[in-house]
Image 1: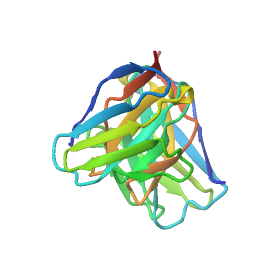
Image 2: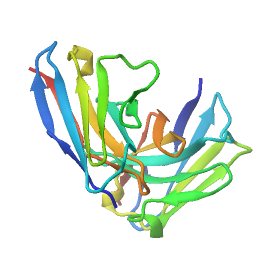
Image 3: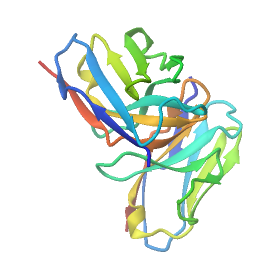
Image 4: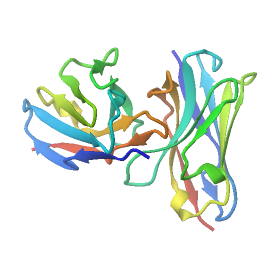
Length: 119
Length: 106
């Protein structure tokens, strides 16, 4: 059974870079048909797609965040990662990683990790 | 970007009631629409994909319909375990979600 698990610091200082990793277990990240992505949810608010990546390294980013995002994949470790630079309090959110089936639907999600931006 | 407008933002219904949530896209998305359920403190779960297809393992009381710009999500008989927030999501790039509908028991 495929599982995803987010990891990374829970507290990041303003203007610094947020870094998260999603580890995929129980299956390969290199499967065709699937993309892998990040979604975030500010406390008490709705969902926002951050960006997605294919195992080949092809990326798709939310235009509103594109200047600050890098998503990468490490197929040897079955992991993909998010870096978000120049963070502010507005980037405080629960960050989920997910499997994106056919680039369309998130059919498997990690449990989420809360990242707080504060000095 | 395509904006997704969900309504209502919250609703209260009795067990056994039929519950309907609508989602309107700012432009034609054909059937590129999914529905998710998110229970408090949990990750969202995919319920309906491509507007009307029930995800494997999801109870048949959940259904979806629509195409173009107007979509409907229905719970045919509300159960206590359906208390959650429901989101629509379209998948023309960039992916966008609706604002959510919080469903409570009356």
